[in-house]
Length: 326
Ligand code: CP
Image (cartoon, rainbow, N blue to C red; front, top):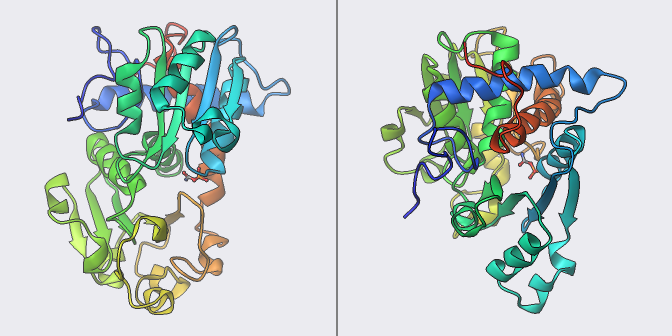
């Protein structure tokens, strides 16, 4: 059983960042506001602030990653922390060392934060429940469960382009069933108070009772995109699929692939997002991924500032007056 608020300390401040679920709107806004102040740092000639000088952050990635691992590393370095990237395949894990023994050894090296990606849902919570009191844990994606920093960089991107959350209709398209990103986005969007969240996909890729999360379900792509302000395409998570949930990728693209023609159902100024990695010609056409409505690479850039904000807040090193929710 996952404890919902184990990520907060007794004063309600962030100690670990494990999932969006259970966090209050004011805390999410505080992360976005602090990230906004850090976004300027990445544009300076010297792209560093000394907030985490003397701290050691370990990237523990038990599953592959391009964007998340590298932007966490850049974010930590821009906060002046020392960063260790544990190569799991070349570590003692490959010789049978348990996760807890690996953690104990890293703690013995006086590490201050673990950034964890793992194929098992709940792995980051398990680690947070077992670390020493001075160690902080950030979830960089666990199984199908949560990818909270991805959701926050997506919220940051939406706020930067669209301003207010309240009037927005957001459509999430594709493999909702296996997507930790979709789950975290839904919690973030509903907590931040958007007008409507829609999920669009074939019946086999929509979780049972997803409506209880406050979303509307569509199986027809054009109907779901109608009037949307934000369109988020998701990758087919083939590595998490058991059995045949789809006839073929070709047929999937015909029905659910985001093309210029189908995107025309959304508002003319709708933005197109994707957490990456992109499978061109499967869930999105290249003309849309690289087109004028796409903010996909801006999402990647924003990941650095948002991860700086999350790490600084969890470590309790935010300067007074920074990042406070309005
Ligand atoms: N969006 C995302 O998590 O990408 P990576 O798997 O490359 O980190």
